[in-house]
Image 1 (cartoon, rainbow, N blue to C red):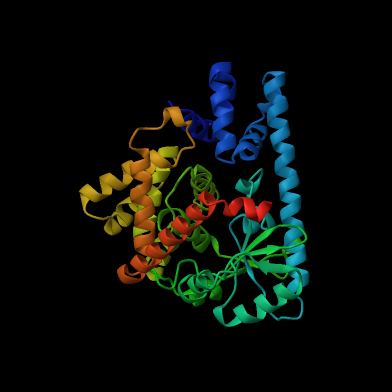
Image 2 (cartoon, rainbow, N blue to C red; image 1 turned 90 degrees about the vertical axis):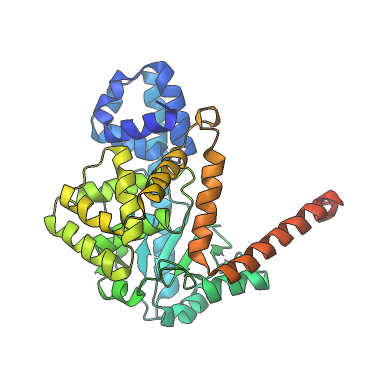
Length: 371
């Protein structure tokens, strides 16, 4: 078993931690850090009550990861606080997405999770008002190139990413879950109509309702991404299934909602991939979602591609064809993001920019920048 798969197995069976040998723990911890899952691993082991029974050095490493997770959560809560302050008076109640929503809603799989940035969703009609307020309160765009600005504003589902110039924190402001130029673009008004208001530190914000939260995780991983080392996002989906799946209405509503929003195909891929983590999905749901499956040869190929790239294995453990799998999934994510003509122009522009940057460094331009 590779280190990434061993990590996934332990996250699903934390009570088995004491059965692992020292030779297994080292690569497993390396995989956890590669996948940004060290805090989640520590949280799982603590909840299982086994962390205190592990060898002292290992216990120290895991408790350090737990402290890092707590510090990260505190920083995330502070960013939400600053965001609330910035948007006071705008009349907009943003929807927190991903890590921000998991944490502020107190959902169990958020413990120890390390978020890269903060993501929010607002109605498209509120974008201008929200962006103006953020710019007044210290956020600035990280993409100043005119083409990048056009790329995000005209074709994508979000503003160009923002960064706070004092704290360096990053913020993505979305108006939908998928690009407006994509093959599938859900009706964002349906999502906003069923937002769940948050309380406590999250007051003034909302989160997506349960099935929409699941579908957002699904499309982020299986429609709009290439899956490279994204075990962390699959663990999020496993957490949602375990937390929400006990309610039989969840599955009925998940199927209905995925059909309504046009997200059946990525849901099919996601439920298949959850089998890699031994997550139980009711048989009637598996049978129903198979109606959205592609032809069988493509379905088998996609399963192999996702299985090759999702786990944060060490380079020596990765199959020789993993780079090919990544290239195919990268191309697929772009194919789904833009129509062919627009995609060709976009990739040609990116290639030209990369070539110019390479020539700039080769001719000493970098030295002039820093000299």
